[in-house]
Image (cartoon, rainbow, N blue to C red; front, side, top):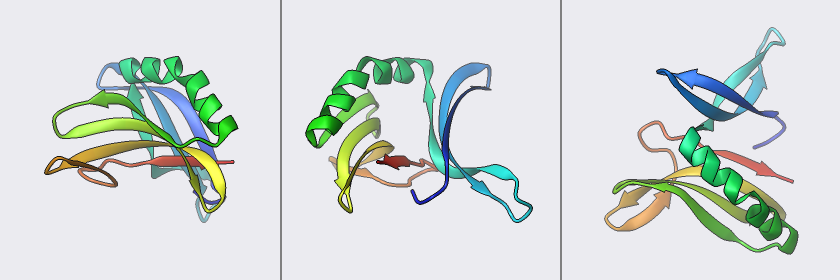
Length: 118
């Protein structure tokens, strides 16, 4: 994700509460602005994420790669993955899409990701 800070905040969208995890950037005027890299979780998905918090911490501590499915529809999944990238361990919150039976991550239909590496 680079050097940009990541913030987590509770927001309301279309009358529903959501947890928004988003990368911010500094614009040319020096103001901090929300970026397009982020993910918004509804209350049900956030609750599932909270339930696996210790499992995620355990995977990080033991350097074990694992993907946790938070929600699943026929064509889309929202997942948390613990993995290594360029020698650093971190947590991805991603949307996955179904490509003829093969689950792929990436940007599709506006889906965006946040990766936090330590």
